[in-house]
Image (cartoon, rainbow, N blue to C red; front, side, top):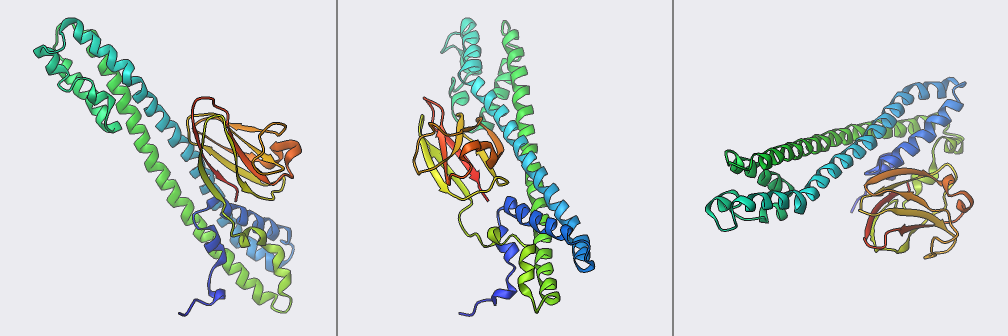
Length: 318
């Protein structure tokens, strides 16, 4: 089986596929190195060509990250309303109807044909529709005007939250498409810059190495980690040698307060270490320098600070 000659493979595109953070890191390195050499007309030309692509990549990445946070916020808002619906709101409405129309009566059955099941089970959309249908069923029922008003108000909140979430998902998708286009353009240009430098420095190719972050480009280690962690537990998820300038993207997509710390040995408890906390449903970019005296430790660890709930996380250490 014939393989594509390695020199015809774009290493910048390949190593940053599905990892925008890594693309920004590689791009920032080369952009800065070209700026340092801007006094040389050859490098000045490369910088003038590349810098706008670098800025577009960074801008696209920042918008994508920010929009991702917005989407999570909208999702939380909708889920909070669903949680309020069951059993709080639906229970109140049920008792209000029962006060005038006992279970089994024709009016009660007309209002709640499946009793409380539509509010307790099914998809989010099905529950939203159940509230909307209840609003229709209560319309015109004497003595239940206050309940109807509450159902109408709550139905409006659900509809608004659902629309906001749907809009955020669409916007996030667009932002993701934009940053992917920016990544491709920037990485293709880096490949072009590598080629131009090889032509310019064919007799001394080692001089090219200062322009590219070879440690990151060559690093094939796993960079994105996801996992669940039991209540009141801690675990090691990776071993990495990081610098003070490195960052860790920590997404706490569970329901508990989680912490991250750098330990000297694997599976050590957080006792005695600097723990950086991340709230539930939040994403933080954490500087390695935030771990104060533990910055040279190599074992990255997660701790679940809840005594009752399991947690879940996604970490990017590219």
